[in-house]
Structure formats: structure tokens, C-alpha cells
Amino acid sequence: MAHFDDARALVEHARQTMIRIKAAYRESLAEKSIKPALAVEIKNLMENLRSALDYAATGLFAKYGKSKSASPRIYFPYALETQTVDEFRNTNRVETCIPGLGAVRPDIVAKLESYQAFANADNVWLPCFMDLNNENKHERLTPQTRRETKELRLTSGRASIRIGQGASISVGDGASIQIGGGLVIPGGQTFGVNRPPVTVGPGRAEVVTWVSFEFTSNGKAVIPFLRKAIEGVDRIVNELAMM
Image (tube, rainbow, N blue to C red; front, side):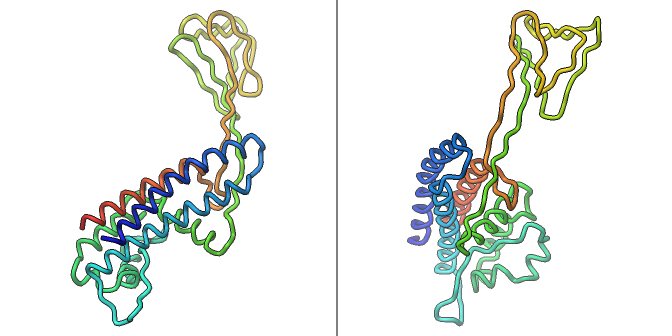
């Protein structure tokens, strides 16, 4: 179980790294540029999570695997995002990564397949994570872009209207819109994110700017994606440790 203990320790380390990433993330957003500390911490977190998966694979090989090689190279098997289950099996990926496993524990092979993108759309994080991590392994920090999106939010009482960027509403002369507790938008105006409406009555109209960094290569928002990877790797490690 030592390999799985090491894998769990790496996942826990990733959770602690996430705290530092959030701090550097906020600073980078404020400065509108990627701070070097953010890129380094992201790189470290992803490498540790990838190592945790490989430790789990090594743990399975130590318990059930067999190889003619004295020092086989063991890796966590994963399918490409576009691969079907048949294509994945035809590559013999599991046997290549964890020799001998399928002969004695086909149930674990099935479990490994259940983590793949072809098994569940929610698993698409795995090939995306591996692709990002492979880029980092080649000492190319994955660039991120800063994206801002605006939203007009009209609120009165418990009712609200939200209008996204690029959308607008026109109210004709003599007409009006009433929201919730009495906020009225008089007629004769067109409003949207870049042109908040004139309003009358209790309530408020505000433009909210949502800001995030995204991975350029896959368009994933950084913080949600890293959270997904941590939780995904944690689940995989703990489930495989029980088998």
C-alpha cells in the first residue's frame, strides 16, 4: 500500500498548493498579467497529480502485474478525448501501462476504463489534464488568457433579470417593464450591458464583470479545472486502493 500512500500524500499536497494558487490568481487578476508564481504553482500541482496517478498504477502493478522486463515503465493509462472504447482497447493501452493486470484482474481493467472520457462525458477532464501536463513536462508552461465577460443584472426584491454580453432589450414608447418589488423600466429605451436602463422605484441595476484566466490550449477556466482534477485524481486513487 506504500504506493497508494504516496499517491494520497501527493493529492493532499496538491490541495495545499491550491491555496497558494488562489492567492497568486487573485494577484494576477488585479495586475491583469500572469504572475510567475501562479504559473509555477500550477505546474507543480499538475505534476504532483500526474505522479499520484502513476503511483496508483505502480501500486496496481506491484499487487497484480507481471512483466518480462526487470524494470518496466509503469504509467496510468488514459484514452485520448476523441477515442472510443474499441479504439482504446485496440491500442492495448492498459497492458502497455500496467503489464499483466488484465490477466488476473479484468475487473480493475474495467474500472480503469470507467474513468475514461468515452465512458462518461464528465471524465473529459482526464485527457485534458494529461495534455496540459504533457506540455508542462516539456518545460513549456501552458499559457493562460484573461477573459472578461459582463452581465447586466436588474434586481428588485427576490426577482431579477440578467442580460449577457451582446444582448439587449428594447421597450417601446408607452410600454414599461416592472420587476419584483416595484422596479420599473420606462419605455422609450434600449438597454444592455453597455447601456444600463433608466429605472424608477426600489431596486438596482448593476453591471457585473466576471473575470477569469483560461488555459489557451483548451479554453478551460483555470481554478474550476484544477479543482476538478484534484477531486478526480483523489477519487481514482482511493477507489483503486480498495481493489
